[in-house]
Amino acid sequence: MRATDNKAIKTVTFFMGDGIGPEISDSVFAVFQAAHVPVRFDIYNVGEAEYNRNGKLIPDEAFASFEKTKVLLKSPITTPVGKGFRSLNVTMRKKYDLYANFRPAKSNPAVVTPFPNTDIVTFRENTEDLYAGIEEQISDDEMHSIKVITRSKSERICRSAFEFARNCGRKKVTCIHKANIMKLSDGLFLHVFEEVAKDYPDIIADNMIVDACAMNLVLDPTKFDVLVTENLYGDILTDLTSGLIGGVGLMPSANVGTDMAMFEAVHGSAPDIAGKNIANPTAFLWSACMMLDHIGLNDYADLIRSAISNVMNAGVHTTRDIGGNASTTEYTDALVSEIKKLIAMAA
Image (cartoon, rainbow, N blue to C red):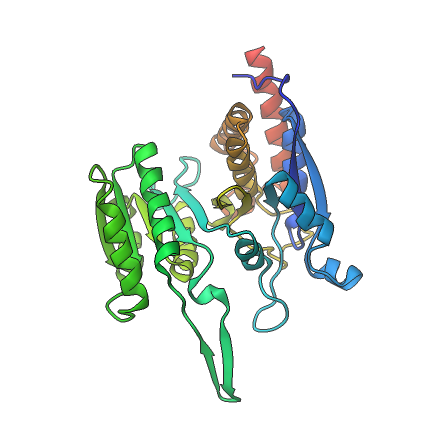
């Protein structure tokens, strides 16, 4: 079906990151142009290079744009390991209370893996747990990180998972925790989950310890449907679920709050391959499609998803990470050609 061209143009804030960020951003721009998506991007440079230029990781104007548009598409940003500034993702999630991190992992017939029937959606609480960054130095030889779990934030992420399951015809929600050891913090999260589950008798509710979950995911991912979990566990397990479907280059994500939302690929900025024109933009494109769904442009999202599916299934212009030989540019050009073909067929 052809996306219609008579819709009002919507403005979306766009953060241009670093590493492979500019390359995969160019893919999104080219695909959106080919699909005639009625979106105008308000683009800002963010990250370390912006800090070195102007003394701020995120310009004030970029914050103001997001606060106005309420929708942000963000390309990857490098976060220093063990030093330097904190993750800008964590900053954005906390600043704007983007509490629900939604990460779907669905296998694709074009990508051969041992797990061809994977279809798992993870709801990760996004604002507390160890990622709250509450740390203290006791001595040169002892550091403390404080884990924070609250009833209110546990309840809203659990309810988000159950609401999604009900609205999308999913059968089961599984709470992932470590309440056998962290009886107070994880115990609270599990207890809240069990309370919320009572409001959804049509949905199967169970729970699993996080290490057992990791083992079972690689034994048989079809056992799982919707997962809901805390911040750190969710971050780790969604890298695992991305591996089940072929890698982080295939997993999109949304960070949703009450009235604002940020969309980004799960993967990082991959500085080791930056500038080599070999990055896979699929996860970022799918994240952009989730953004289009969010703002009511579902027909354009469907058009882009169809083009991606057709190009991947053809197997001629896929990127190296999923067994092909195409460059980022060649893959993007193939998507643009496919979009034009689909539009012409629907005319």
